[in-house]
Length: 239
Image 1 (tube, helix red, strand yellow):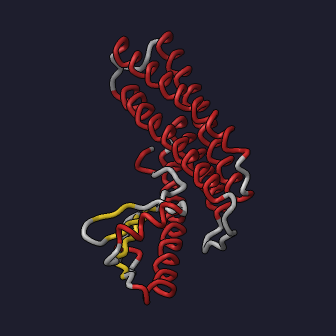
Image 2: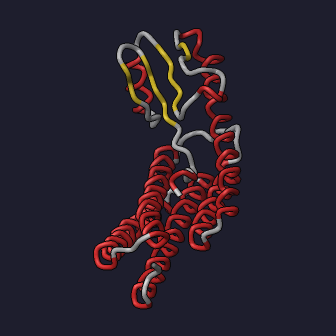
Image 3: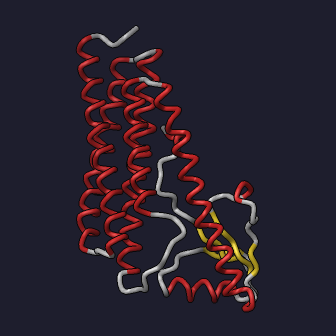
């Protein structure tokens, strides 16, 4: 049974709120990429303000969605839509968190040297924006074929992320192998997750020194240094 008119009207309002939140998330991500590429820490305060707006929007969307569930007891496609909105709402909020994390790295690296990366971060950010827009459009239009295109885009972003991982492993082997750093992460990208790990007898002390330089990782006993790659994308399974 489809929503009655009054409930359908509220469902449209829910869609509008989700679209507004998606726009905020995209704006935060785009500004964080601009801040990184231009070493512009001045944008970081604006990103923080947008994140606050995203957090507020997340609460509004959740409240409206749960209110619909409690009062209207939707079924079938209506129920699936509202549950999807609740899940996607959290994913969009996490994009705001990722944008904030990027802006924090920008502030740490502001006075550091310029680095040549093996991937085009600007292009990566553009592709991520397309992924977000396409995923939201597929949801609102109930277009499964359009949603399938996000799968291919996700694979492309994964490949870019693995390229950076491979570059780090090779760079560490060239520059740090003689100092006792041993890569533990498989060289085959297909066997890797989202983290790169190295072993060193003085791993804990080495990591603390890196953290002081703004390189954030974590330590695993007895001698493992682990570095995560925060991907600049929204996983399709979340949508």
